[in-house]
Amino acid sequence: AQSVAQPEDQVNVAEGNPLTVKCTYSVSGNPYLFWYVQYPNRGLQFLLKYITGDNLVKGSYGFEAEFNKSQTSFHLKKPSALVSDSALYFCAVRDKGDSNYQLIWGAGTKLIIKP
Amino acid sequence: GAVVSQHPSWVICKSGTSVKIECRSLDFQATTMFWYRQFPKQSLMLMATSNEGSKATYEQGVEKDKFLINHASLTLSTLTVTSAHPEDSSFYICSASTGLGVQPQHFGDGTRLSIL
Image (cartoon, rainbow over all chains, first blue to last red; front, side, top):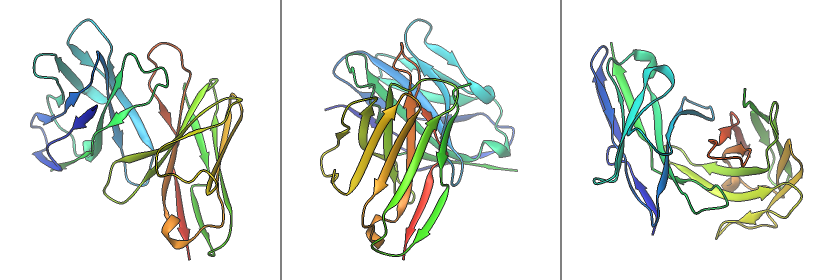
């Protein structure tokens, strides 16, 4: 069965420190991987995606993510956190063979950046 | 680019009322649109996938007669919650995809539905 795991319900980081939001996945084929961010009472905003090629993907707002095939992980990172990064973050995966373009979603991780 | 507009953003209505939510792709053609439901502090639950001009594909457990989805054009999909009851109160979010390559889904800002 295809699944996405975000093992941390909440991550607390001090402003200026590096942050990591973890994501691991399980798909039958090769994955496309995505990170989205959700601010309160809003829809989701796309941050970045991995399709193929370089394992380190750079996205919006200074975020990046590293695809690790052997560990089936796609952790989201940022070198220096901002208070405005506080939000809910979702990891999602799509099987390359899925013609419906459906995404399998993680449960979400609440990121809290403290001043 | 890739803007999705969802309307209304907030609805409060009486039990038994039918509510229509619109999802429009403003600057691209969306061959596929998705409707999600999100409960407080939870992830997105996919309700249905709709392709322009064809019937929506509903996820298991989602009542198609309760949640009517129409995707009549490449820029508009609607979700109608028929005879809404308090248990239908939730945050509904739509997303749209061009279906080209590996484009991400682009999301509307969601609709907060409260049934009294």
